[in-house]
Amino acid sequence: MLKNISNLGDAAVYCDFGSEVNEKTNLNVISYFNSLSKLIEEHKINGINNITPSYNKLIISFDLSTTNYLEIRKIVLDLIVDNKINNNHKKIKIPVCCDDEFGLDFNRLSDKTKLSKEEIIELYLNKEYFCYMTGFIAGMPFLGDINKDIRCDRLETPRIKVPKGSVGITEQFANIYTFESPGGWNIIGNTPQKVFDPSNLKEPALIKPGDRVNFYQISKKDYLNWNE
Amino acid sequence: MSNTYFEILRPGINTTIQDKGRNHMYHVGIAISGAIDQRNYKLCNKIVDNDLSDAAIEFAYQGPLLKLKDGKINFSITGNVLFKIIRKNSSVEDGICYKNYILEGEEQIDIISTKNTVYGYLAVKGGFELEKVWNSYSTNTKANVGSNNGKKYSIADKIFIKNSDLQINKEKKIHYDLSSDNEIRVIKGTNFDFFSRKAQSIFFKKEFLVTKLSDRMGIRLSGHKLENIVSTNIKSEGLVRGVIQVPADGNPIIMLSDHGTIGGYPKIAVVISADLDLMGQFTPGSIINFKEVSLEEAQNIFKAYTDETNRYLNECN
Image 1: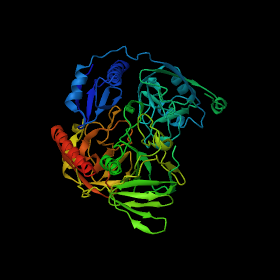
Image 2 (image 1 turned 90 degrees about the vertical axis):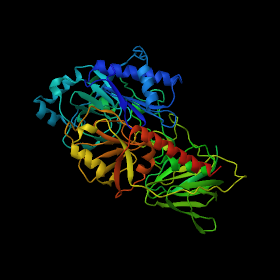
Image 3 (image 1 turned 180 degrees about the vertical axis):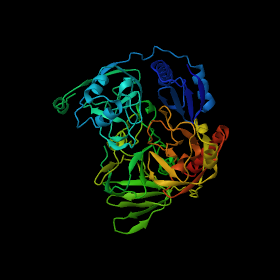
Image 4 (image 1 turned 135 degrees about the vertical axis):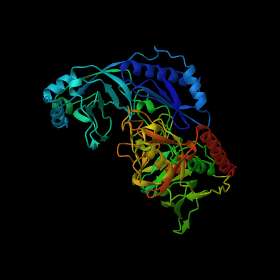
């Protein structure tokens, strides 16, 4: 449930759903997001610019020239949250090639987890993940939770450039770098699949919060010949 | 489609198309983008009688050298900008900001540099031949979304200009006050109490330096490391323009228009809306300090900021 609501600066509302990160909390955040988005689409509320759901928070930014904190706060507090909107979450399968050329951090992961590369891959593939949120860079999904035995901190020194398509893990989460970007996640492979497509105006992000994701391994040959 | 266009003879350092910004895409990971200095962006459109939300060219430091092809336009440049107009007879005119000019085919605009600021704006009467992506013309170079395929302009690129009626061409001018202030007003952030008493006091009492690690995504500050006594990481959550995050190294980072949509560093404060234009214009080497205001004060200051913008806009009516 919504635990606390406050202002983030003069043009955003900060909604806190509790400190725990789990699917139940996150689905609650997503329900608030969907319910508010529906009101915006139906032009029933004005002035909201953006809504950002994350693990356990929802941040609503608004146009200070048309509304203010107290008005948007009231909209959130009075909101009738419909858990059924858009809950047709998809199941998505993502190919990943874990050849050494792409799996940049298996040595580090093996050191930290005392598992072989093969064991790490097996534990990684053998799970269905939940998408908590997308963002940081366009379309990047934050997936969880990965098996406890392969959890590992971020790199001590982040890479200046993580290649586009890289599949990374850190702590209980997995992600996919939709663009070349700086980053500190442990990279275990690369996907040839387009995860963010700006030419798809309706749904540019392949994976959305609430979706379920499975990874399956492909060979380098399949990777190079990948054709969507 | 019009045949009138700018040919880019020199692209400048970071020349893009910007407007009010792109909303309702944060949840996908696409930032608001838009002009860093919203007031100057609006004013340059106003001077050429455009809709205030038309696309404008934004440039940073060294701007572009543009040659007009096939046509005649009415343009204006705003900001604190040094520019020249190269006429057909090769005579060179010193440009003045905040007024409109007629430019004929084969004539050039040479935007030499911004002065003591980072960004300037160029608008052309009638606007550019561009298409909106997710309801905005803004170029987002991080997600490669928007005008020019989400990329900054390069040499030999063309920017097409819509045909417009130049029959009635009144001279328009705004008397803009270019004086600046080094005090940035902020509201305490959601993690203000993560920082030691000493760090809290330093944040509001000491001066910070704007470093070279600054761009449309954000501004990194240095000068005083802010000690965090709770946790240097939070669960990643949404960000908005103006949020000041403090990573483990203790040096604050201010989010600007192209910021990552989520972040995991504690938020010590948020720049008030009225000071975002000013904040974005600080050049590396600038010394700034922060002043705390309440939410109510911030709202009143924003009203005053809006009134002042409207006063400038009304000079052109």
